[in-house]
Length: 526
Image 1 (cartoon, helix red, strand yellow):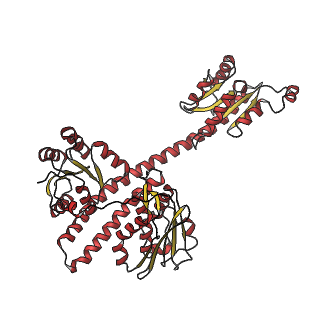
Image 2 (cartoon, rainbow, N blue to C red):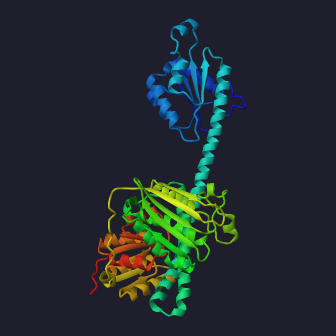
Image 3 (tube, rainbow, N blue to C red):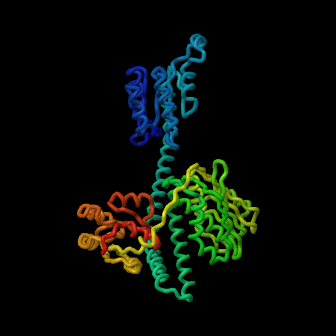
């Protein structure tokens, strides 16, 4: 018999059959096959779930074949299905014997199954069963399954779109960081060479705007990762007072140029928390940048820290433009901005607070926003779990270390960035050589054997990973290798370490980061 025109199976789809006897299983399979479907007999209950984990359209299951173990495992399988899946199950029940049913009240096949599987995409078919009834029920089940597969395909396509978006953003970040690196190196060099008062203001403008651009690039990449749960924290014991103090120091020029009065009220004692210092500074930077952007010149911004019994509390408040009641419930949603912020050209990308919330929640904390209304300021409160441990002190590099000369090689194909970073290193007293591609860079490293080498990853002909691998094969650990790249995600740092690098720096690199990297290299320079 041929299949009815409307009974179209999905490609590769099977119907799993578990019956009490091989004869019953074969009869069910033949019935399904004549309708145009592919039935697969499961001869051993232990093999059932291997079949279900394949491209299974439905499950046809005889109640007599359902041991307690089968029902228990099936219940667990159904609970662990992907979000799109609701596997159709057709249970075949034995004929009802009214007298026997009265004697076994509460222990019928239906009631036994319902106790183990109280909910799901389940149909009960009582035998004796007409062939047309089975086919109609299976057709309904497979149509439901087809809609689930369509939903699965849609979800997978959306995930592929997200991956393509993230790959584009990573490439965009890389391309933006290369010119940002050159600009930042130029500003650092100008600060060292030119101390004239008349050039200080434009230098500070360039530096502020470069930092802002770098922060926007970082936020753009990180918000995509945090919404997908792809950020891993480097947790360590910290003092929240120190994190806030460092963030304020980094933003000093920004709030001073905006003419704000910044008030910092730390707790009288250390506030010990377990956190990722980079991500915590990112949280505070975003919140403080928001306050700076949305507070008029001469306004007041306050950051206050304290601890209660089990939480560290940071409150950032301002007397700026505030928020209306309609914005508050969605302030942490992606691309949410106040209308007055957009109209007054103060809005950024609308992603900073989404990123902040994600990072706070990764730390096991919460964040809330409040505002009395438009023109009445805003307040953000971050609560983080407190630990009873003293935060470690980190000693800064000594001035003697900072000026001890090293032999340095820079391998960078961007002419502007290479020239400027070489000048910065030479100004610090280091002996510097350079190369512009992987092959000549490897030759230079093998020949000169410097104390440290800064190697760009995106080199022509031979990339930075290959350079590092060849250096390690030829010279072992004789040279400290630092990867320099526009890609700044955690996996990029992991790839660099696996390739043989000692460290990974993301463009644009600050002068202090450059100096700290050099200080860590043992010197052979005489």
